[in-house]
Amino acid sequence: MMRNSTATYGWLSKGLHWLMACLIIGLLAVGIIMTDMPAAPQKYELYGLHKAFGIIVLSLVIIRIVWRSTNPTPTLPTTMPRWQRIASHAVHIALYAAMIGMPLSGWLMSSSFGYPTSVFGVIELPHLVDKNPARGELLGEIHETGMIAFFVLLALHVGAALKHHFITKDGILKRMLP
Image 1 (cartoon, rainbow, N blue to C red):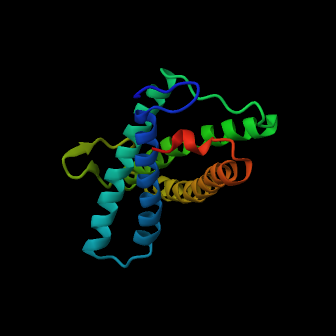
Image 2: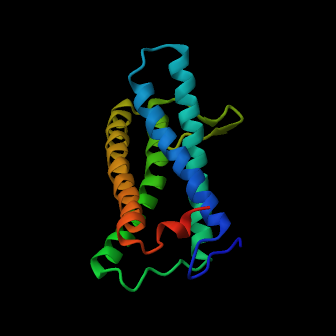
């Protein structure tokens, strides 16, 4: 089924979840690798790919938010303690904020340094702000801090899913598996 139910996620939600998971993990890994590379054409090619896939993630998260707002969300087990329900919602909200904040901070950083942001050289995106290298440096720090926060959020999200699958055995992870 394409749509979600109160028992499980539909194939569109599952597909968006796993596609974005792969893209985000790849972006985090490439982000670490490219910043440590010496200045060379390969480094700048990676920056271009990183920006393009970051914009794709931003586009997909918007689609995902719209889809989520028009579909039911599977209910959490009644056996789940209240604090875990609150933590689950808080981590999901923080993940959505990171999925929006990271691409935007990267785009703002590129704009501040006067660098172009494009999707594979096909779609050139406008600068969001005027050139201001000092602001670019600040946004770079924000982007890097966001990366660390993203890793923490992903660890919490994956850890909770695995805990529910292997320890609690309440079917939470199965709802998102293909």
